[in-house]
Image (spheres, one colour):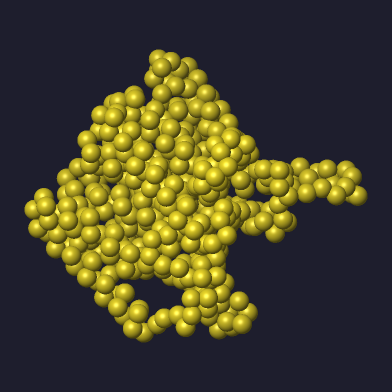
Length: 474
């Protein structure tokens, strides 16, 4: 993973060298060297006795500690180039790899292209998952790969389309690359230059949201581009496993997927309500109201958080629906953050089942999704993640209020950070950055972006003493 991180910095180093960014080239060269040095030390002092020797415990450790190490290494270009201090560099790197897309740069337009590219690359790598990309390109861990991928995967179910783990990773990676290429070509046809097309395509499909302008999409004022971006953000919110299955069984698989259908219904319902609200309350003309509503619902529900208008100025009803879609997020197995629509479906079905069983105690019924019976432990896992997200949201909000942030701003920052969105409302609204957060809040923002990207328990279990002292228990 550290070797792959160093390799991912090479395009930015080449761009800096070609454009004569001396400081940027030196910063990336040093970063690549440090990645190689860490790789060498890890190879020297540790290693697997056999590729099938990885168990649940090892998979959790490799994923959790690997993500942490890669996020730290990803901050080095910002530090070495003198662009940010250490804490702000960590925030930028963790936001990039976690797909949150939050930034501490007040003016990204003055940044060299090499740094802009690295921000987008970190978004893109973290979107599908460092482990998935690494496994698809560089290596194979035998049967132990299952435990590593399971620790990184998002959503209540861990779908596999192929018997071999590496083949599965390669299928997902091909879909990911293919969508990125198609997206970049579409943006180019909408009028973006090649550099902007590539950067925005990477951060769209990764649902990260890093842009190369301060106003991101608003700088273009291009309706065709906004509708095109909305389409690809919605596509990126669907399960990549579903797309891989569709390439084998036909595209009808997509429209038969219960979770994706409900996600689309949520998007269009929220967009319709917000369109009406903007039309009636802010006197937007109908076309502009629909355009802004569709774009921002797609942007926030996918947790990409591109900005085409200052939604922080929208009426309260619109804000409530935008925050609701931000909290829910996209589908399981997508690059989107948030709770995931599948979990909401399972929780609603579980509650409905509990009510029916209260009336008919002898009733035997099971929760189903896509026509398949879902095991009880998966339903309980969905409930545990829901409770964890709510608890962590409250805790992070209290931390920020202790740090001097207003109540409503603290709630907004907490929800957007935990959902891996980035921009929200208030202090870090559509036109603001995380630079306004106090240092303690920035530190905890890094912690919670890391926790939420790996869905809490993969990271939290690392702090359990028995995890380290009782290997046989895992």
